[in-house]
Image 1 (cartoon, rainbow, N blue to C red):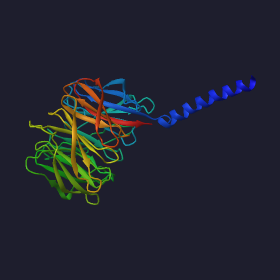
Image 2: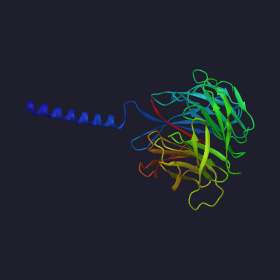
Image 3: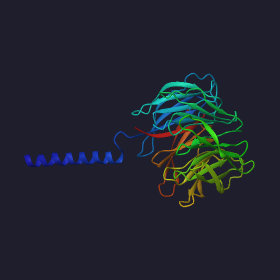
Image 4: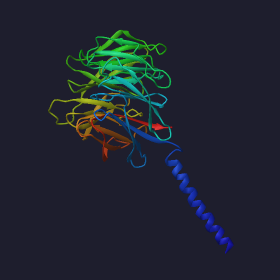
Length: 371
């Protein structure tokens, strides 16, 4: 009996060990995925956790943006390269960038400090070192740069470049040598050299790539391979593909493709765009059509082919793809909600999972793995 008892104990221990090993293989020790949703009218950031096994979301916290007297129309956000600080821009009064420390174990936010912005910024982004906060002002027609102090406090702007009509988005390239800024008001994608030591922006020798008249370039994304840039044009509802020369920061147009869902005839309003880390497909949001169109990316040329769309939240401005490339989360400014989708890893097809209530006017989504 003793031998049989020992065998039974060892058998149970083997089962437990197998379950533990399976759990460790499915989810790395300590790894977790957190989601941050900016809600402009309710002046808060929702903190959620994403379950990587089934895509479920759990609201962990709701963090107010302190010191805001009048909420704005959107809450542009940016995460520091080391994933320790979330910066939240406000477009109401006062116009500031609030820094929040990210707890690496819980994902929750703790307010650090706010720093002044030069204008109402439609987009903010840290440079690749995390030492500067770059901004694009749509109503102020400006491009700005603020130094970032320690720990995560945004300092007053050190550079404000004027006469960039309806500047709409801004990002440094992977090498942190050049910065692109689409300006809807004059149909250009402006090209700047970036000094990572001083944070200074200087127009390049060929300072802009020209778009078609009245195209209205708005948002853009770099291909993960570093040799392509995709630009959404708000007014002509097209997606533009550019070859990107990393040595000079120059763009060369190679394709124009309609960004509208099939059969859509009304005035379009393209909003955000994202591409997974593996480089295909490309997704964007269409606010008027309430849809998420997707495009296959040619692996050799980088050109785009429309491959369908799915309906989503009312007036979707922002959405995000988690680092694994398995889930897409889209928010609706007028529905005050979030829809989650699983991404088919072969075709890129989106399958809706669930809907979640958010705050008022959710418009920005950031997703990151911690620690």
